[in-house]
Length: 151
Image 1 (cartoon, rainbow, N blue to C red):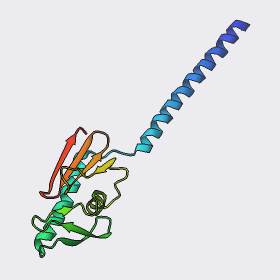
Image 2 (image 1 turned 180 degrees about the horizontal axis):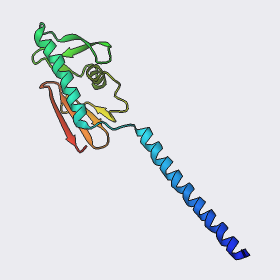
Image 3 (image 1 turned 90 degrees about the horizontal axis):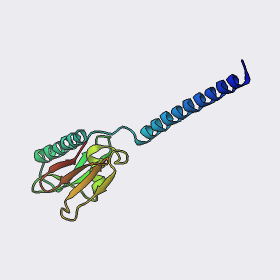
């Protein structure tokens, strides 16, 4: 084998090795970005779980004297006190929307919710941003839950 063939072979191996390393680096970068984000839960699944908890709270309120406060055991086992609308029986976001989330969902909002706000137009409501494009809005006066955006 002459010198030129050897040089071509070495160049080909170096090029091949560089390409393989580039592909491995891209795959690792993609895997790390997926691991950091964690699994996304579809908005309709979150909405369904939220509605289930709301109905449990309201059902307990209907069976008891219609008080404006209720002792409640969140799904993660913590004992909390919910503020309830004494006329309709729906839980209110008092002291704030994150407290209501943890009381009804039983877990911190970090990771599942990317933003929480209380709309100025609805002081008894909460807006929970689920991921990048989905928003779940809760209205404490009526117990309505609206899911907007794309999953």
